Length: 219
Image (cartoon, rainbow, N blue to C red; front, side, top):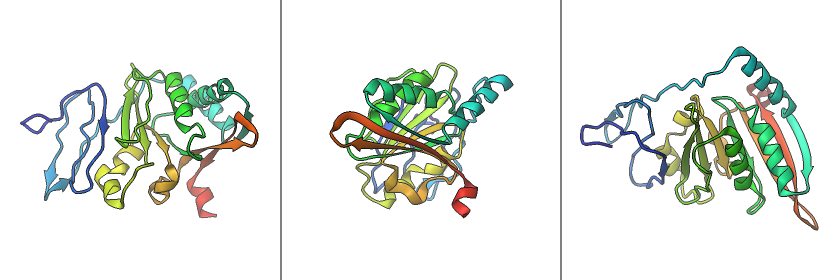
């Protein structure tokens, strides 16, 4: 951030917010946006609304692809199969989608996200943000992808500092590792991806993908 209080354009975001400071990440904006701060905290962040260029036909195609994954379960016996599933799933994602990942340590959450981001065409290679909490990626047509990893989340104050609503309720795609640590903060409308080990098959994973909705959570 410059001395005049404006957020400068930067190639990517990697940030871990200390629990004792009320700060907010400085996004890479195509334009400059003021970050109003009052009473020691963030108030009224003005975020850009990004609308990737999509024709009605492209949107309809994505809707059809999403239907395939509304309730999807498959055994992937090789990493190549896992990558193929991630690529097919990515083709149906749209701005505003939040994807929560669940699975034990080493089950392949980061690998799935790497494959997904390659399919989306992000300029940056996805890397685990386990020490920084958030990584920012973007595509040549200005679709922003935020990659969260809450494995080392220390306390609720860190979540408040992040301002998750600014990410989850915007025109970004949000990918969340260790989503079980922030269940109460996840939006009701979200995708869930579950990766499970298969006994005696170290390369295999049971992959389940579900679409969660407001209506389902009210039942």
